[in-house]
Length: 442
Length: 138
Image 1: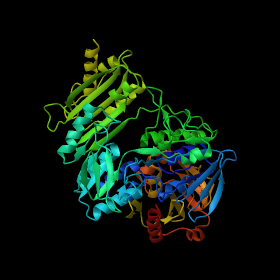
Image 2 (image 1 turned 180 degrees about the vertical axis):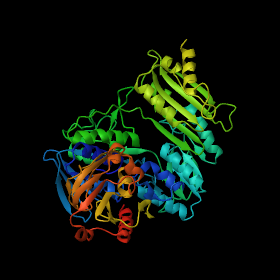
Image 3 (image 1 turned 90 degrees about the horizontal axis):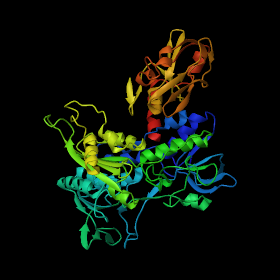
Image 4 (image 1 turned 120 degrees about the vertical axis):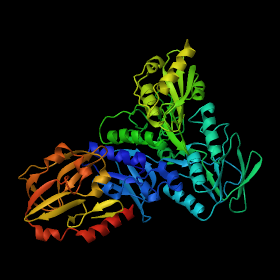
């Protein structure tokens, strides 16, 4: 396994389950293995005391599963003909390892567009444990303000964390809305308003034009405005780390991530690719995607690991289900947004409903808004977005199951749901949203 | 009992670097896996244990334990003849997660070479230091 985080460790574990005696080696350039990247913003925010707490798989795990973990090891080449991997080990020595099956889980790197002054020091990103420690150190050294470039999940979660640490935060997003991959503009607007009510400054539709400062960045130019800050975080997005695969002659797909089949095998026999560096098909459009989420990484890793050890397992594709909590608001999505459906030339009807998370008369009921995206001809549900004060995640999961089972909106409108005043409304908001779509279809 | 980095390490037991604990009870030895082991494996769903009467050897596997995500050999903390097998763990493997040092014991063994073998194990103080070093190692 080249890579020892979500996808790599999952693949190694699945391989061990299938084959109790195989020699399994994990190679990673990082000092740490088996930690949760997704938890990084919450260490910065202070909800989790230490970065080390994010290590999901302690040393005992690797030892008990007889997984040979080699940290601070650089993989310099793969020879697909001889089935060997060349590495530079911790001590700087070159070694050649042989494999029967190879799993590439090289992840993704933070992407930096060609902005003037980008070579200047002090532009941080949040990808690994050490990136988190760097940001934390700047905050501890007394930073008062931060600029975050990019309003995706990482950018916003980090922005929230920094506000919780007392910084003034400005978010700059090139597109006209926040969370552009996840939400439609109408849903994103209510999240943005919540963030702004908590003091986050959000500039949408603005491009970062230049990094200013001598050696070190002290300000940016964005949309013609100069913004000074003590901390600069690039959250433009990530790009699949494919150099090793490309150099080895392993083909990429149309998303520029490593091309895989339903067994997560690349075009080269016995070489698998998983996680942020690999692509896989959308369950709805059947087009390839490279969605780069932790849940996708582990599901792919499980499939590839089993196959690498001689089993037969299939990856069924992705709906790109995602959730986040930003201050007091949870936002989640699964399947296609209305905008993504339009890009796929799909004719859709949407229905959105605002309701409460408990009976309206029950104390502390919080607002919740459900939007459904339904393909017009088949009446199949193809996407959902939910924003609410609580109870978003499991509704997103329920709708993800519905989409996977190709449920149509008529069936959802008749769904049998549970009810008790302290827990939910009599009429489940997902069902009401389905009824809304049915009215439009009349 | 102390907690080292969130892992329980009770006093009065001997520990191996294969995550086994043993407790000397008169002329018998009770053995199991440590809290550190069960927390690393997480939700344990299956335990394969030897039958009474079989022999186990210190440092060698005598069974396996499987969680939702992982599978690991069980390594004996001491050599001897198996006298009792914890049937409750076989029918309710989650007992290993709940009480690794209590109801989650695995075997009672009549040891064959205990005095010499204790020298290969860590006592409480050594085990505390080892658990600290393990979690520092990342």
